Amino acid sequence: MSLDKATVAKIAHLARIKVPEEELDHLAGELNNILSFVEQLNEVDTGNVPPMTSVAAQKLRRRKDEVTDGGYPQDVLKNGPETAEGYFAVPKVVE
Amino acid sequence: MTQLTHLTMADALQGLAEKQFTAVELTEAHIRAMEKARPLNAFITETPDQALEMAKASDARRAKGEAGPMDGLPIAVKDLFCTKDVLTTAASHILDGFQPRYESTVTSNLWRDGAVMLGKVNLDEFAMGSANITSYYGDVINPWSPGEPGNWSRKLVPGGSSGGSAAAVAARVALGATGTDTGGSIRQPAAFTGIVGIKPTYGRCSRWGVVAFASSLDQAGPMTRTVRDSAIMLRSMCGFDPKDSTSVDMLVPDFEKALTGDIRGLRVGIPKEYRVDGMPAEIEEMWQKGIEWLRGAGAVPVEISLPHTKYALPAYYIVAPAEASSNLARYDGVRYGLRVDGNSLSEMYENTRGEGFGKEVRRRILIGTYVLSAGYYDAYYLQAQKVRTRIKWDFDQAFERCDVILTPTAPSGAFAIGEKMDDPIQMYLNDVFTVPVNLAGLPGMSLPAGLGADGLPLGLQLIGKPFDEETLFRVGGVIEQAAQFTATPPFMA
Image 1: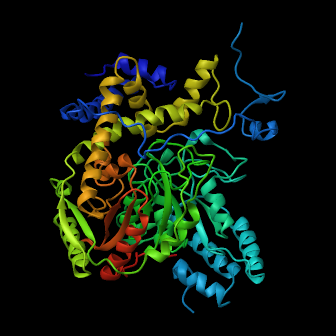
Image 2: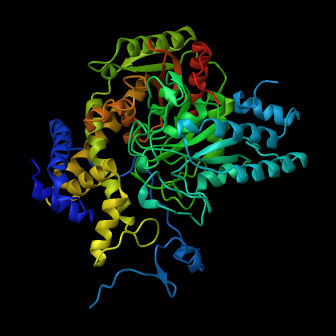
Image 3: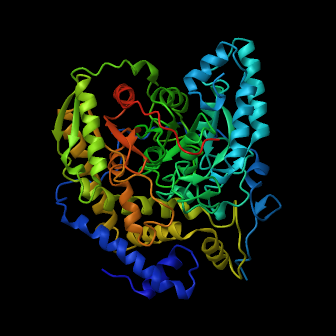
């Protein structure tokens, strides 16, 4: 499998990262190097091997479904680049 | 009196208890050292005022007989831990100006036990790197670099990602520092700077409030100048935390008590697969020395096999970027940090993330996005997680034959800034001995074993069974005694 420039542009869009057109070729080369490096994993026989889901055998804990935190909107909004009326503000999304 | 900045934590605690000096005096000495060490670029944010306030409060507690296990000890905090109202950057442009309104559990635990924060130390951006050369805030210089500060004949990397932590501790700026380790980020910089670092078992230290890189691999741990100091600091850092779903509800042992010096009859596994091609002879020699030291103390070396070792790095470079691409989705210019405007919401996201992430982070997010994308998930991510299971099984089997494993920490000592930078894979190979430990969730310790031919420190790594950090401390104490590593870097603040 080898990534071309168009695929890299598509992945960059999926990841919502703007990549300048002139960097796409170089980036494709780097990503292909990494992908061919990881290709060797196919040599490993994983026929009856379950994928790892947790390093330690432990069940996720459960707790009561109740509100245990909150009530400080000013703290939540404090680091927002743009806020208004107790909300985070973003560019207009509805015409 | 011995210079206050050269004390171990254990000695500093004794000096404080015996009123030889106060926490304020100890802290002032370290603040001066922090200023003097600025050419290393170890700190992103210095917090001297806060340090002095914390030191005063510590002296007051001690006067009342209420001193905690780390009371009055000045430490540095990797800038990946959220600290309340103190800039927290993850060394990334995208977190510009971020001042959390909360404190990470690990740092809360340290302050609870009386530690004093000197400041926030530099790292690779989002902890992605092995040389501390991907920080938005500039490279960190290893204090072992030859020459004079600001006029080094060769600028060496301190290792990464916890490079600022390692440089600060080695240069006698802080008695200890917090680090985090996803693929070797505590152990490799510890080895490169001649200090001790331990990545505890996954689940020991809470990840709550630590900026996430790869959640199934990330663990916090201490970096100090002695094994005993790591035992002191780890005990304060870890403990059950209901806010981290993978935090383990287990009693925290008094790790210092494990330093008995008695390893008679202990079986030490020597994995044959860790003799990699092209490994310098001095690394191999250091490893042999380590084996002899342990044999001399009554331990029994046994050859073991970890057949899937060579697949650890490729598995890691799927799993870690996949988790990172998901974790880093939150940096979108809406809730914190940098925002770069655009004509639409989507354009704002793309502009912000395009400008906010550095090249290494971008590369890993793109790899992660690709391997998780429709049609490729099974071939890459699922296969990597299956290989990860086999790596874990290798260790399970090995630990039926041995109690602890001894390996080199890294395939080389510190290299110069500018080396190994053209090819990401070359850089990734630094972590060949440390990555398997994260993939299996095991505890690992690096400690200085001696100097290489170029006069730079080399580290040995101990790998333990899950939640058996005590054996690491016990064996680490013996190696420390035998190695008598007293060399100091050319630059000390």
